[in-house]
Length: 111
Figure 1 (cartoon, rainbow, N blue to C red):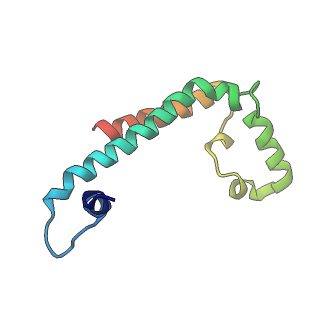
Figure 2 (spheres, rainbow, N blue to C red):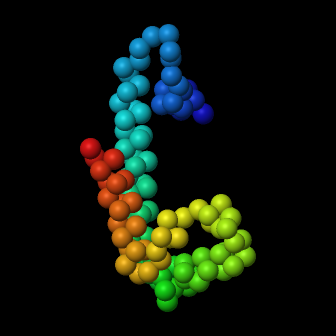
């Protein structure tokens, strides 16, 4: 293994509290932005797929699943299935939640 490859994780992630390390600011900034782009691409692709997966006519409808959790868990349903879909799981709500998350990630990555 090349020596630079062995030092790469330390260069990217190690923090030296005894002195300032401006040389590590750029790699961390790039890594976090790249990670944010990965999350954004995941949520962006989910926008097109959410109705077919967990929509009212999807493979596993969120409404039917949450009703089953409600019957089985009772008052502790929020503990067993912590999700925003308890507020609403219609087609419009599903797409709105995913759009909101994708836009928040986009703003965090680029601003």
